[in-house]
Length: 421
Image (cartoon, rainbow, N blue to C red; front, side):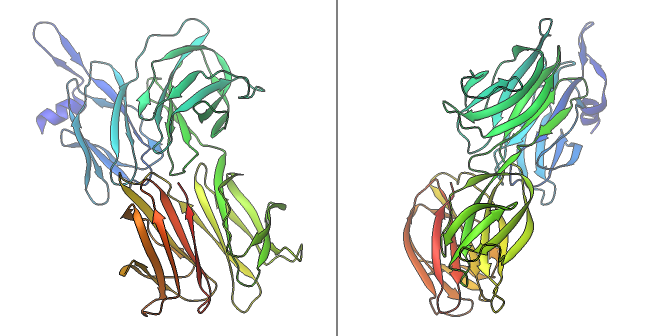
């Protein structure tokens, strides 16, 4: 214990002769989507009791050497990472936790770099957005667009970091696009980059199959981290309103989908993140709203909006799911089952002849299930019965994320399958 405390609190340790081993500093950043709060210890001594996703510490003092950093679930105690890291005297580092779910990955990078030339700042990028391919990174002066602009960093690969590069001081929008394209998947809005600042652009995942979030990490002595969330989310719309066979979806008063047929599912589309008003009207009766409520779209997340009929009222309900479109484990698919029924029927789900899940209640989704890539017969029965209500035989290809929706009412249930990633 005395050694561990010395590593954490020891100021300076004396080496042979007149050499002094000064402490270093680590900032810890949790950007592993779907991973719970983590506790972090160095050589057995707690240094961060609990760190949540989308959060960072300031610099934490660590003694010179190679302490063992252990990252564990703050709730279950499961160990995610246990490995030594380097600590050089007076050096600054950032320790990133990324990857996702119960298998996060750690990366340590040194933050120190020489001062930029007069009138310039230092920037590097760190691409840790799981499930997102190579990216182009743009620094756009206010008023300019990605069209006709040259990336500041081109073809940045996942799980990679660049060298620090100098750019002229000023205001810039940080804009990200899939490598070689002009499809904007992130725009920071105007950010001020001042002289001699040293910072890292961290690109990280939320679970969207397309969008990312970002943060600017300063090497400013204290280790300031500024999360700059994506202003955009994505959504798809599922029309399962038994009593309204053709409907329009309005967002903030404007028609987003017209004549959406019963049983149809849209592709994902962009939507401004935050609180939005959603209305549903029969296509044949504009203004006769059967649903009118606010829903929140989380920044950089994918959402499924599932509309259904409320039996006996003529009105509709809609529930919103936050989708997890992280890539499945190698050789696997992930499958989610959603009960979008317009009555009170709960369903048991079967894969081939084997029961996979029991009693999926209306208006709810199952957890994502990992299956081998193969052809399956997926069937559904009212909970506790063996009466098959709906069935679908389909190939589920490894590397993809699927959702199957059960909708309708008892005696007329149907299913529709979507590929979400």
